[in-house]
Amino acid sequence: EPIPEDLNKQWAAFRKELHLIEKMKIPRCVLLPSYIQLEIHAFCDSSERAYCAEIYLKCIASEFISVSLLTSKTRVAPLKTQSLPRLELCAALLLSNVLQVVLREFPLSIHKTIAWTDSTITLAWLKTEPYRWQPFVAYRVSKIQTTIPSVEWCHVSGIDNPADLGTRGLLPSQLLAHDQWIQGPLWLNQPMNEMSSYKIPETFSFPDNALKEKKSVVTCVAKIVPLPEFIDRISSFTKLVRVCAWILRFIKNSRSPVSRTFGYLKSSELHTAVVTIVRLIQQAEFPNEIKCRVQGNPLPKDNKLLPLNLFCDSEGIEACLNSRPLTELSPDPSDFNALTPAHFLVGGPIHQFPEPSQPSRSVALSERWNLIQRLRRYFWDRWSTEYLHRLQPRSKWWRTKPNLQLGYMVIVEKEQTAPLNWTLGRINKLFFGPDQK
Image 1 (cartoon, rainbow, N blue to C red):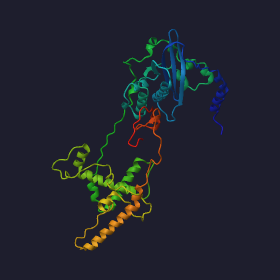
Image 2: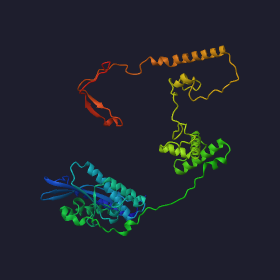
Image 3: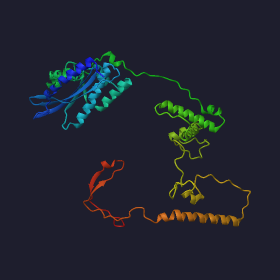
Image 4: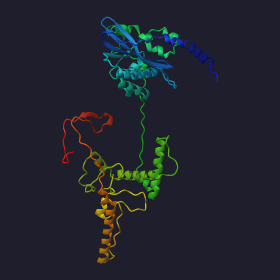
């Protein structure tokens, strides 16, 4: 497919002058032999097609000042049309990211760092708090202020801004004709006291259109329907759980349209619905008690729940005591339950349902004694065959290793620290245990 004629002409002109890039010389030596101090000056500019950031190193000696290009970076403007002040702010954000890398990687001490832009609206945004602006401006202003907080921002005219060249799309021949791209503006070779006219005074009068972007405030009133009214409409608990599960699915699908759930209700959704119903009922019936527990205050003396040991949790209890298995769990569902400490206390799992009481039935003492003896033998047979023999073998420290010696280099373990960040150390003194290890 042929390209348009205007693009074809631009491409042909660029290819014709591509060999001229060899003539562009960028000095690699940026330091004077006996410099006094170093300064970094960063420039940014934007157009409707691209925005650019340039970093210069100013080396000051006793009788000479040199300015050299350290690095530069350009980016194409977003496809979505933005106003020119917003594009200038994007250029300032690009400058802050590049300048952060330069300041982190530069090996020498920098006496002063100054950022320059020709947009007074951008300077007005950067001199105020981010919360005053809309999200687009607020995010970028906050990012710039946190990335380079100690950098001084100053104003430069558009003619003296070397970053303006990177936003035009110049051909190699045009770029060679501008020494400003490599050496920076001419006034940058002057001492700092002669550049005071380029700084922004404290009482700078910013344009009115810089203060027009304010956050909009939306006020809405939401009515919460009490849960008892919702429960009174449904007489079946199963139906109530399913209705609540459908409502929770609708809320979830509305909040995250990308990952929606379809089809029949899942067991996890039904469980979440039951937990939600219980939580809402507790909040409706015990609001004062829950508030006291959350705030850490004691219950009133006349409260009926005072004898109970109340606690607040996100969802049910965390675990049941004495329910950890003592033996390995079997994948076969037909196998017996694993032994737990509760078997020693209540004769079965701690979470099993209690047996129904039969006070009217009379059991002979001999029959009951035989039953207890049979259950006891059955329990100890399982305990000796499934658990006792597992206590005989040693689970670790099978092999003997030589003791550490003085002068050995070891790794010092630190909690809550990645292993790669552990430090090395030398053994200066040994402390032996009872086994001389």
